[in-house]
Length: 169
Image (cartoon, rainbow, N blue to C red; front, side, top):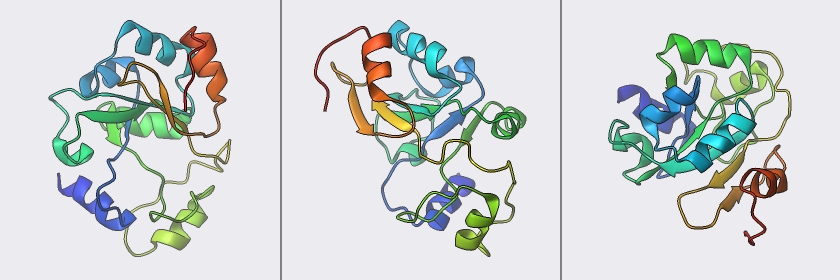
């Protein structure tokens, strides 16, 4: 829990839950409940720039979610990140390497410029491919809710995977 507290401190977050990066869907199931619908979405869009907000499992410490019953999870499409997550047991708190409110960094140098002196290590995995944050889709309610439009087209998620024409915000 000390590492989670340190991430919160370095980022300057107050009460915004931390997302979890996973190496595969089996690892996702350690921290979040996956229905068939959610598993289908994961099969189609992971690894990739889609964060799903799901019901959390009891195994996930509430310090990560600020005691919310939900958690944001993603399997990134980056070989360096996936290898690091696997080396850490398949699950890792993973947020952008910037201070809250600052633009997400595209390179290790940009992270270093923002976080220098507050982190022990910056792993250079190359320039970010897409340059935009992940799309965040909340699937904890009856209808999917887009919490953040990012690099993944929301319509392709909502319409082709969920096979629904229902309105979403």
